[in-house]
Length: 188
Image (cartoon, rainbow, N blue to C red; front, side, top):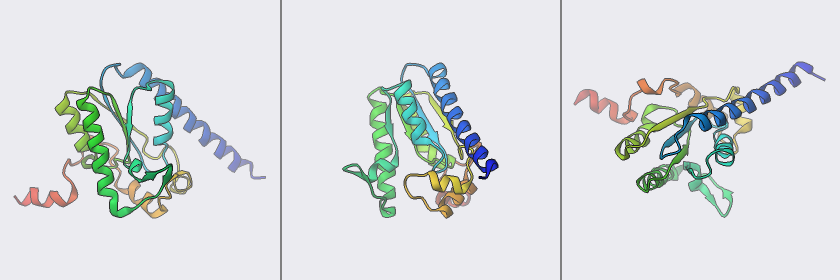
């Protein structure tokens, strides 16, 4: 038996549970009980959905929860179609906007690896006069291989590595423009 590997797995599990508990405690103590937008970001497999379920179950069941992956669930079965990713994100944003305009609190869990991916949500919260809170899980303390094994949507290892490579830990200083708009902005 490889005791070091068993210890490493047990310690990693402890850290993930500790992070989930810390996040839940932070939400209880920090978020106001009035309208808010909470963005949960991280690489696929980092524990976004797990943390959202914990927050909703233990803390704030009245939060509306949206994520782009919900678009791909039909009759309880997840079937990803990359050609519909734009529609999935559009629906997530529209649902968020509608809930915010109805004075509801919203929790959005998507990878949101860069500032420009977060920007539409930040703008809609600002327009609604709603405070925004960001819970950043990054990689949840996992290696790329562990993230690949943990993610429930079958995200390929290469895609996880690409997410990690482009991840803006300090998203506040990232560009709010999508990459295809940046050159137009500089030239114009």
